[in-house]
Length: 448
Image (tube, rainbow, N blue to C red):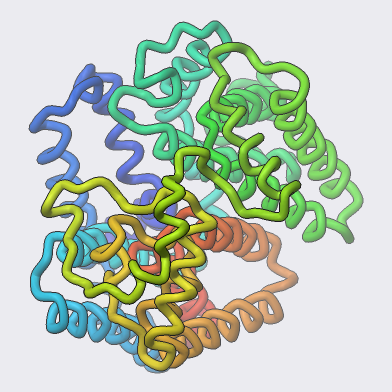
């Protein structure tokens, strides 16, 4: 385990953000991610389980050596217990349906390792290594980004209506590139060293970063993933605010942020290559806002909107993942409205974890509404008050540590994603942030 401590502090946290996506890209390079095949499914499952086991062994070793304070162990045990209790209630109430089982499997294989990785990083203070390691891992992803970039610019993509990559859908592509984009932006504002180019004196890493940022951002725009647009825009604004008292960094942060937002607006309203037709999806959202509506789909069945009250009053027990039915609702505005109505039906304790997906085939795409609907006011207040407490204490305690602030910005960006596209129960970055924040705020004395 001593060798693990020497070699993995730099990569355990970055891999919790990107392990699954890196595996998918490697399969893509090997020609194994172009169609559905057993290697894709079983290889992904086996590799994810192995990473989860490795993360667990690292944490067990740290617990054995008392690397965490007692307070941190108690708090993290409480977080784990909350999830287990929620899953237990759901299994008791709905049985071992495939929908709830899928949530639980993802929690075990992806979310728990993220909690462990965050706890490990907070205890050993590896946030500085996080950024350099993410840039190193970005080299693995870059060839796929270039392939996607070429398809978008020259309209020569052979995959799923020009917006996917192999069998990876457009949303998977966008959110796979996003963490690397955010890290490159941060490193650009700090003019940080890039390990890959340390010995190449004639290569300016800043120029390479600008090129890579441009490629990743064009790729994300081309996917038409509106949630990712909003996340990156939020990050850019938050980064400028965070650097406001650092003249050199705020200048670079402002320059890169304005450039990215301008590029998005240009592609939306002025010109976009034919291979970037996905950007038109944003116009649906913008036009809806002009009419005072939250609209994300023009294909929503009008009968759905007219019969929301009847749907809400009906019984649960429709396991969409098991019976193969299409989701009832596709539009975000309708999903949110239904979640609020479901909350009103059981405002104190909610309907139970996974109840929304069982009934409608999709989660609400908003973590707060999902909590209200499925855990009621009691569960939602417990979760939100705990997260707010950790966040404010973290920002106040570590405001002078630049790497901590930058990492919190990335966590905050994923919090935005969780409230426009994600689900609370499988939000691995949230658990990573909690693990990191708790062990950083309540360290064992020998690591202070």
